Amino acid sequence: MRRRLLHNETDGGGLAQKAADLLAEAMTLEGTLHLPDVRDDYRSRLEQVVLLATSALDNTEETADVALLQSVLLRAQAARAEDARYGAGQLSRGSQRAPTWSDCEDGWQRVEQIVCTAEEAALEAARLAGLLDTDKARAISHRAEIAAKAAREIVIERNRAYTFHADPGFSFGEGWYLTAASLFAGLPIQIRPGAAQELQAKRFLHDAGLEGSLRPYRSRPASPKHLTHIIAEAFHADAAEAQSALRKAFLGDDSPAASLRSWIDGKVGGNREQKVLLWVRTGDHDAPRNTCFDELRKISELVSNAGLTPIFFGDAVPAGLVPTSGIDLTLCWKEPLFQGEDMRRAQLQLFEELRDRYGLVGQIGVTTAGMDGPALMGLPTLYLTQEPNVRLGKWVGAVPGYQEVVRAPGYFEIIRTTLGQWQQCPPECAG
Image 1 (cartoon, rainbow, N blue to C red):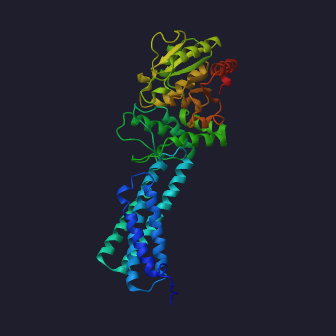
Image 2 (cartoon, rainbow, N blue to C red):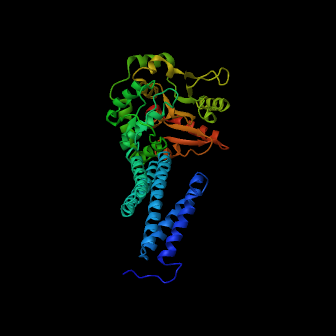
Image 3 (cartoon, helix red, strand yellow):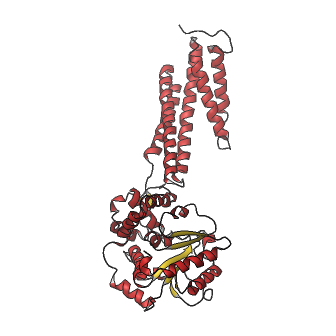
């Protein structure tokens, strides 16, 4: 026989009513769970109810008290299952947007733990409903079962794929480092059906040997924030091997088409002087990152003073805002040569040809993902940023020749010094 506690406040009967009262207090919070800190309070109260009611069941033999405690526990466990389903959903969304792959995985492990809580609560609710054997109890148990199944679906339906954006409105360059990260870590990839450049994206992935990585398109893909971190880890492990693998995947074994070589020769002509690519960005997205043309003019002067020829690349430069000296390849990516089915490889081959045959020794620009393809293939890179870049900063010290330049006093001197180093390095040693 169970030992009966003598004090009325702590015997089964007293605890039974106290547990019922605590549950009633907790339920009054249901309409305000969206307010700050209320859900945490609600969750804590439910845990107290479960502990108190479970303890009371161990210390009572009164039939009425037992039924009351079982009813209290049933309702508390059902509420816990529903709360866990909500918590798993919220945390899963945050985990998908986590800044690193490891943060994402840690978040999803916690989601799994919460889902297990929902399932355990639902199982206990089903047991209690069986003991009570009433329609009301079974209805409450069914509600907990539905919540637990919905929570489990969150884990089952997790989208592990990363979206390869194939719409001109998205960053073109992000496709290059998604491809790189998939090569290194076997990431699954999805492309939105019907996107303007869907066929071109599929062609690039096929040529890179990643056709098997494609998955059907689904909502809530993994965050692209993880990709630079994955690439940095691969380069830290073996930079030479990582770069070699990327060059093979990005460029393939075939020589550039004669049409591409003819186009470059027509634009650059017989100019064999050493050159620096100056990137121009004027997009609507995240406009504060756009090129400052006063800065671009100063940099182009530094390039010329170092005995190098600037090549302007990317978006258009407004007339009169920079010196007319140099080579203008802005907006060239809109030409038919770079818009065909092989558009992505053609752009990369353009950079490679400029480097191999026309003296390109480095590139400078704002934090535009367009720079990332040639940078990962080994083109020395200075990227300019207003403050240390959390994502791309991971490549500094990992990707050879990749340098961050924060716009702090004296940063033009850093650019001048680097240009001098590039000028002393012939094109063949820039690789």
